[in-house]
Image (cartoon, rainbow, N blue to C red; front, top):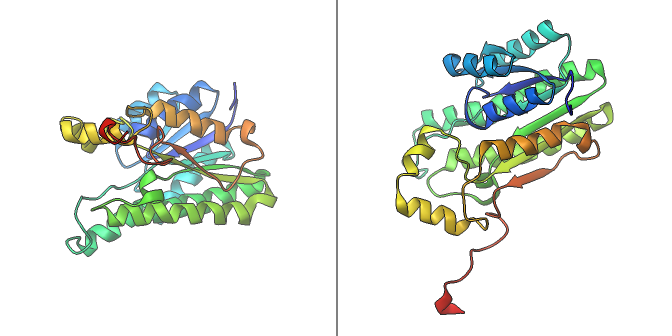
Length: 256
């Protein structure tokens, strides 16, 4: 088992990518704690993977600190933090976006990652190090129309990843990011858009591998970065995007 006995806190672990990480990490021997605002789904996922659940608003610094403290109280240490929690916000341009939405998206998608990482590092330093995996996004790498708050927050995560890696690398803490592409996560927005043939055609055209990704594929990347197999990797961003960010899709045959 690649994570035998490793204590892991997963934010946003109730559903989607976070839940896939919880299941995969548990399968590899980790003690998993899920921190999420979705209590019903969070408890269900925790039960499936034999872990614990703590109700947490990731946009609230005190609740993030409490989640870390409860993890340490249960298991005596914290080895791995996986930050998957995010708030997508709506789809409209910056002129139409309310200030309330801007702040709400950044509170969870950026601030919450900082809060959890800050408090997790404090515990990791007591035990000789650990690993942090931050789920960013290809939108943060490239930009996206009508999604200014989310893109801004996800872009900032790359800087946070590098800064944390530099600050704490000599103390044994590794920090890396993953940028998923279009993932069939089961989230309401994805489920709604899957029924739009134009959207599905666009997604497939933009993805070299011609399909959506699966949460389990992102979880596999997170497992690698959190494990000792990635012991010499820090401050990096791994795109798990089916080739979305490597270039333009092939030209139509009429151009060839």
